Length: 327
Image 1 (spheres, rainbow, N blue to C red):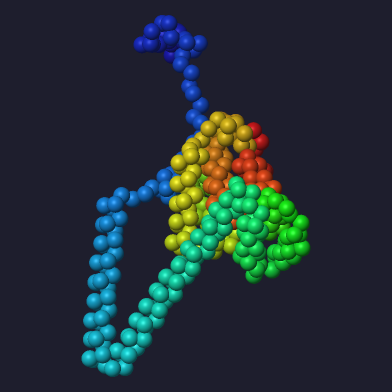
Image 2 (image 1 turned 180 degrees about the vertical axis):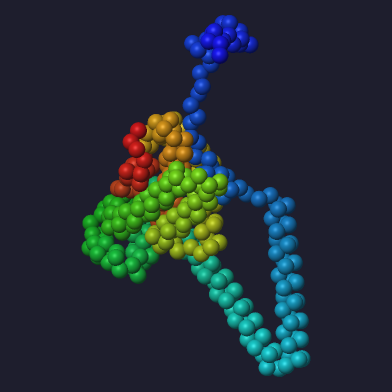
């Protein structure tokens, strides 16, 4: 075997050296799962698409109704007993549809009530209207009249209702006594959702697993936050609420990943160097926290008067403590 040196000719120019080679830029995690969720939920179908789906739903409903009518009439002609059973089952099905529609209508009504309460509180604070602020405080206690965990808070608001001499003081007492405990529960929901999304993104390598987890976790989080503040929403109400929250975030650019988010949240930049999946997990968790804070803003019956608005950085740091290595 020959031990002579081997000469390998390179096609690259002679002036290309490691020192002059282009720098390979680090890929910054972008939270693509949450970006996709926001795009899906905030997308508004065109008028033509709405017309198509409305026409299709009407056609399917008409065909199903005619088929059910023919089926029941056929059974009545063949056997009155079987026909009566079919009529009874059809009636139960229609009744269930009416009950579901009524539940959705009541749920949307509760969300509108909370939205109106918040708008009235904003107006009372902006105008310094003491009478309006006391009316808002009374409506807030009525909203939570059937919440046993807030019984002490309602008693405290009643006892101190005459002590406030301006709108800020009256609504500040109501916020401290009635909403502070609910804020704590809502923050726990946000932290749990952020932890779940970050964990699945970082650990599960399956395609679309992070997208499905982000979508379901955010829908559940927004619905739970609405329930905490008294706006128990049905299926349609939850979807409308989710669209409202994510549309607002997309419009304000809050679902975009900036350097401040990466640098301040759990060492996201360092994590992205150690593992791209870890970096994506941190960013998806942070964007989920942003959605949660926006949901609190939308579902909360009062603006923030004496309480501080939750910090996304603080929520994510508590949610991800111990989950990822420190950056």
